[in-house]
Image (cartoon, rainbow, N blue to C red; front, side, top):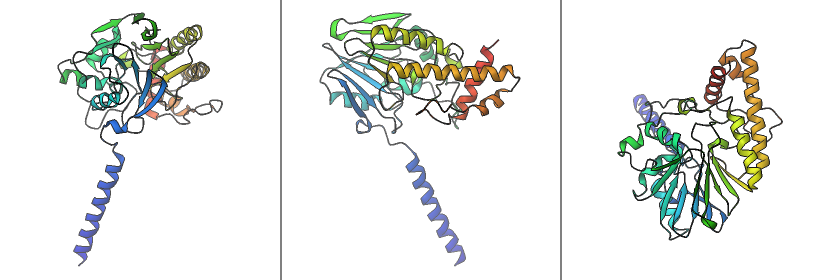
Length: 317
């Protein structure tokens, strides 16, 4: 009897464990898991922030087709295509990848080969290599396989730019800008002049500590300077809304300026720690988001903090 009770308890515990594990897993990628925000009659943001989708995707409808900015995590390409069909009958003709990380580019492989793929020249090289970000913990099973290598290079960038690229004209115009290294060394910022909207992606992902990806040319001490160039340009272009990489709502130029101050405060605190002779771990464990940054994450992910601190220590001479 006792053996039966124990066996029954183990079966119940196992079932509960499987249930909990299932609840912890994000749902399978689907068009139903994408939230659509309409910014203008021809510009939308598709989000799956709580469904494991990855970075925000902008969808710009032009007279000749649809431009998609970033394509989310693996498995989300087809759901994106299905959702776009509920918005417009125009075909997808272009993908713009803002940077190399898998949660922004992996869906590329599910789009037709006829799609023109555009990125910064450094991002093209980074996407071919698909090095893991320096600021995330290695997966338990080891690094994810290179999704583009697994798909014979399908929909790697076909067109690149160095500093600026203009695509289209009039109401269909898109301007791509590169202001320097920050999150990576290939962060493209995508401007839609007719809407006064700037898609910044993970250079300004949300109100929290960004990843400074040493594995893909990112920088700590130069991050704020790059963002300041972008902010000065945004002022001159009268940008009205910013699409962030992982934010539920758009932000403003004023919020971008506040984010720059946040980065500057972080870098100064890290450099002060190094100057005081503290170790990387001591400085990383001491960082707390200053109270003046209301609405920011109070406790950034420790592995990200440590990786950023380590990079800034190495960059500070």
